[in-house]
Image 1 (tube, rainbow, N blue to C red):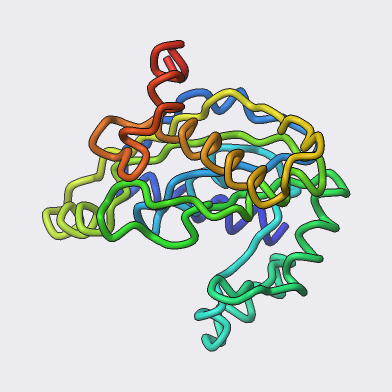
Image 2: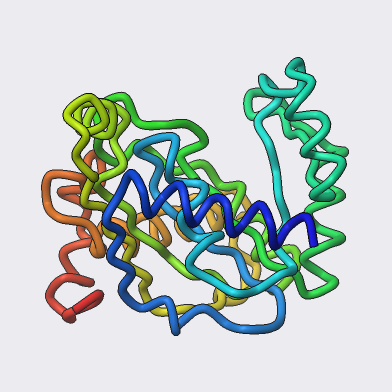
Length: 225
């Protein structure tokens, strides 16, 4: 009930401040373990995948900096969410996410780990891929743009709705490791995931992956069209 209310209020707020175009949301598996991995441009990013799906088994993680704020602690308890330290190994949070994914739940994560100050893709961290490898969860690459904090704030000052796009790619599962060095495997699969996200983004948002050979392969194959 509480999650449904919060989801409704979030949708209402988004409707008031933004014109959101969602493409490919039907590709999100409606059951079973799934990790939605998206780029991270602004504060609105986290709300978009949650409002674009009707799934109720969403694993909610909140950045550690909000744990000091009473209202966030209250909301975390209400929504069965938990705080995660983004800058240090958080084994407690990792165990909790792994447990819930193995139970077949649904996680939204930004592999970059933080909002991009360049407003383009930063190098991905291996967390999303590690969780997918550990749990067998499906990976769904998602691109979000139009949520840059700078742009959203400018539009709010002008009483103008921001134009935001969410594009989902094709869901996929990781190939087996097959004896490959683990660090190398995670690095390669992280690049694969980030290039799939980059292929869904307009060129100016592709950042450090703009010249990656795998991105050019995906674009040549028509990925994301």
